Amino acid sequence: MLNLICYFCILLELPLKYLSLNQVRVFGVCCVSFYISGCGFIYGDDGLIKSREFEYVNAKESKSLKLPPGLVHQSKADFTQLPSIGKLASEQNIGSALDPSAPVQILAVLENTRLDSQSSLPAVYILDEVLFVWESIQKFFVEYNIDSNINKEDKAIVLTNWVAVDERGIWIELDGSEEAELNRAKFSFKMVKSDIPNELKLIVERNASESRVDEDDEWELASVTWADSADMMNLFLSYYDKQLQIRQHQYRQRIMAGFKVELGQNTKNEAVLVTKALHSLVWEKTAKVMLELGFIIIDKDIRQNTYFLELQSPEPGFFASLFDETESTLPLDAGTYQVVVGEIGENRSILIRDEQGLALEASLVVKLFPNLSRLYGDRR
Image (cartoon, rainbow, N blue to C red):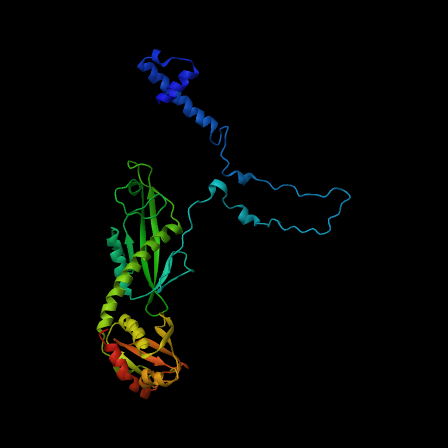
């Protein structure tokens, strides 16, 4: 401030030492007012110097080049012809009216999730136990201090109370911040059954939004967009991924303990292995057992609960016959196989199919059973 006053005093050839303190204050206020008004006069939409950020909006197409009279162009090709954008495109927002926010995508990148691209709301299919997903939603609310209640009419819907969001509509965790007092929203989490067994669809929607300019103002309705709901969906998927990692660690410990399997039949009278272990444990353990038997896992389909395997012929040679136990332990020909983990009532079943997709004969399953029983029950 003092530097500004001295600058004007020099311009006016007015010695600063002859001014009283009150005169300096009055003179300073005048200088600041002149400076501020001068900035508004020089810069801005109505100032002498205008912003050129959106100048391209008013750009016009220049005239096409023409040859002088008497000259002929041998080959004329317009490689920069402007396409017709149509009436709908010409009515879209341009310049400062464009939304500068980054596009939002649903991060359905987990192995057991897939995006529902046909839904008008953010929705993903999750191949998992309904109870585990439901508990993950409840833990998610507790983790982020979100109050919620279950819809009495439809118990598959969870409604949140007011949640603090920032001015962009993204949920924030910091309680008591300025944004938390100025913007808030409500969300709903809905679970729907899928056509695929053991799969459900999760839909997240931002139901309401309010904002205000100051903490003393009344709350006013704010717009709700698809991106607002997508941000909350992505936040949950990130938390759900962490829950999967915790469960996976627990499964590894249980898998190492092993479990008992028995010979049995499924509803189609096919020879299978039967166990009372959890489906997820059987699925994880089966991959390890098949590798121990000498199979190569070439693919898997978690929605069909199927491993696709390949059994190669033993390497020829004297030492291979001494150290390779595959031929003696597996009474199977080289080729491709499938292992399907299914359900039989309250138990789990393990079915082995050949490359034609047919279940192995009961006699072959009986021969395989000693090794299978040992590997499934091993504490490793």
